[in-house]
Amino acid sequence: DVDDGTVRHVLLNKDLTCPDGVVLRSDGVVLVVSPEVNKLWLLKSNNGWGEGVVYDEINLGDEGYPTSVVARERDKMYVLFGYLTE
Image 1 (cartoon, rainbow, N blue to C red):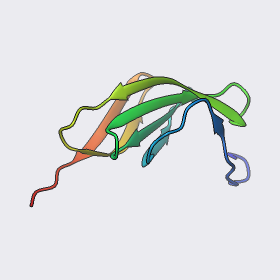
Image 2: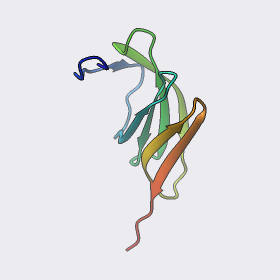
Image 3: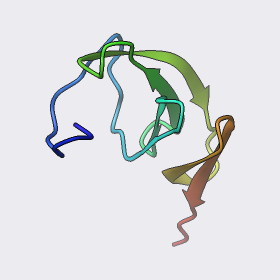
């Protein structure tokens, strides 16, 4: 809750596998990245986040390890990748 800082469970239309990086855009859309499945999900809600929908899913490919996501302005998203070497 933006007013009092409490957290709550949000019901979604789709399960997110191992969500890691999360950011809230200025237009209210939430971006979630998963290093486990290399995906970026875009979520929105029209009832104050009691429920939400995944309205877009972007496959980030197999190169790198997506760990964080950053939003700049309304339509610019940046996924930060880590690279591990043996």
